[in-house]
Image (tube, rainbow, N blue to C red; front, side):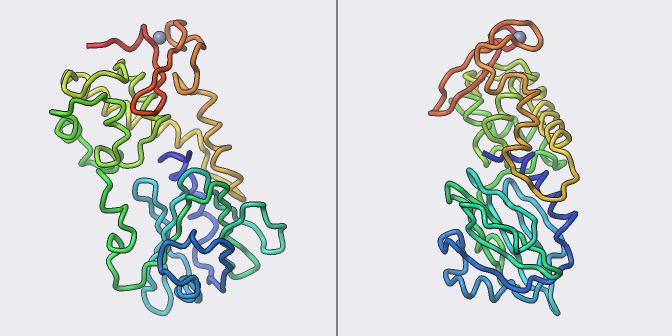
Length: 282
Ligand SMILES: [Zn+2]
């Protein structure tokens, strides 16, 4: 599943190639990909004649600022489990799971391919509050790269919670965009066991956890690369990081620091990977 670094890498790539081209039309092959407006025709009509001024990211949402003769609203995209955005020419053969095609000037196309079909798109009309349409935006915590994401903030979010710290880190209200891979990695870097209850965390552990979250996300974004001619696939980008992961998906393999086999446990239905030597209980 794409996590924050993958979505950020896609955002940077989109900003390199898609800006300032008129959207001339589109084709929706799977209607339920369009979360808003309810009418697919209204979605395409809203986009037609506009151009993308800039791509932003909030959590794992991609948000394209649209311009026309006047401000023209927003295009929102969430990749969910398997969504991919491809930048190509309209005459290139359709991929098996193509859901939405947006045609842009000079024979270009932004194509949304999504095997599992959980991906979503929204057109937010101008003058309408974006959180009112893309309601998930209102349920996001702070961005990990924002100045407000401080040790004090993280401590406040974690305190008094009798749940494992790994589960808390996956809560998008605690920090936006963190998923299974990078939560495991950040816990390894800070030497904290995933099953440690938030109430048992020491102030020093929360401090190193905050540092590790930012560090692991930055490292992964750097590994994702920034130049592409087309967005081959998010899984491929993910794979770049997987090759250097500390613990994620490395059950039984030697810890890169101490050589102890990495272990795996289940927490609230999700797998957690850790080194029993480098990560100590409280
Ligand atoms: Zn170790």
